[in-house]
Length: 212
Image 1 (cartoon, helix red, strand yellow):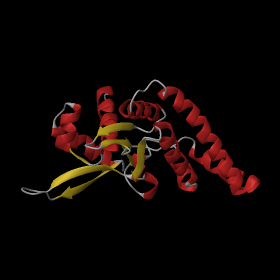
Image 2 (spheres, helix red, strand yellow):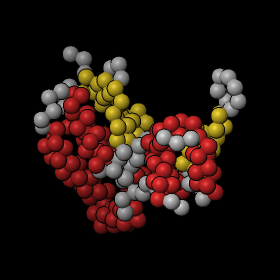
Image 3 (tube, rainbow, N blue to C red):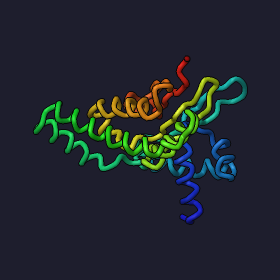
Image 4 (cartoon, rainbow, N blue to C red):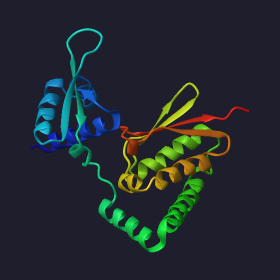
């Protein structure tokens, strides 16, 4: 396979990961190639078990084929040291009990709070804080992006590098939500609207300015 083909395939997988199911036409426009070329790539990826397709009937015309990642394809974006993480969580609980695990999560949250607060210290308004937060999360592997809405922002995280740990212990997810609320300040309203651990494609947080 040519290097250019490998780069195109990785880009296609990344786009499906971050944007959800896509048609060959839409993917072709995003990567700058033809829908025919994209279909050829998708068929090869389907044979490898990395993607699957679903026909969707829209308002008019023939059904459109949407391509999505399979569980195997999603594993191309791995969790951080998943097996080791599970083993350590289990060992902490066995040795120190649930209280010990809670202390570990609280320590992690405080460390993140110190780091995030320092990075957001120069942000003068909520928009700047949300953008800065997204950049931090992107660097940490969450594939984060900000969407502007009429009442504020949506912070999307298209990947969860600690998903195995979060699935094993919901305290990690509660801690991250608390972290966001603290670092964005008392004037910000933060609600989680979708959750990877609960089966959603991505985690989404709705962020808005609290009413005076």
